[in-house]
Image (cartoon, rainbow, N blue to C red):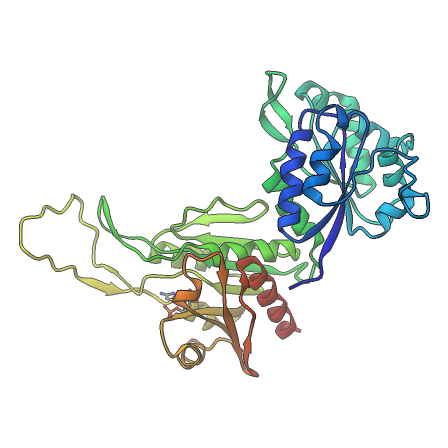
Length: 392
Ligand code: C5P
């Protein structure tokens, strides 16, 4: 488990302030320490008591708070933080940041910071489109402030357009990405994920119970580490992740074709998808009628995508997954050798499939490296750190 990260969450005056409550809850759930600082206007929309209860820490609202040990909250509060996030960031607060104003605790804290600043703008679409705001956003980006969103959609004022604050889940995803060390910056990584779906007739298919969660978690972790990620996704119920080029390819053959089209120039290939080993010889044009007492389905062997990629002349660093029900490490090592992989991730079907967590062992030329049972995103981060070490 990585060391806890900590952020200062600044809340400014806008109706989207209500979303900050959910954001604090998600951050805390994800082991990120949150110190909330609110402007006076923010307190008109949501009370400090709510945020104190959710963050488990006193919320600061004023410059003259005597409870800060050295009496200098504008210095003290940001020194322990890995980043400051302003969500929502109002048009007025953005303008203040541009000019380096320091007339309340939050703006002073931002001016005195020695850590990255991220803002999630939220305002009426006309305010967002106003040349003054657009100029301010350009200037903030020049000052290396990360601007998250805004999104487009229905607004509290009844209008529709750009200016909605990103949802709490989306902000959590982007903050997590921001807080990770950029170990894979400059690296291109291709990942397959999810189950394949082999059509028998227009309504029936051969598939498996893979959820795609492990592959999507690896894609997210790679994005967090600064990689250029392409995700070839089989059948899953998951939403394509932000910042990741996601291509849908549901059959084993479509997945093979898509991988081969994108593999050139990749540094790393990770085959997480549960690819069907066999698929029907041909899809029936019409629904098969139940007339006979039994039905024989003739299947043909599919290409092994991972083995094909690993045998390319300029093959990327290839990582496979072995999901087994017994003899885990033996079977996994046999697969690693058969497919000529520098690394394979061994997991038991019962530990991995459809679960939010996973227990894996990494097998490489140096032997077996068991990882603790933890969330799939944490497994993904540990796996990619291991890959990065092997690449070095
Ligand atoms: O199915 P098997 O246990 O051989 O899968 C091991 C690894 O090979 C997995 O990483 C899987 O994504 C990959 N694979 C593949 N194409 C196949 C079968 C498996 O890429 N047709």
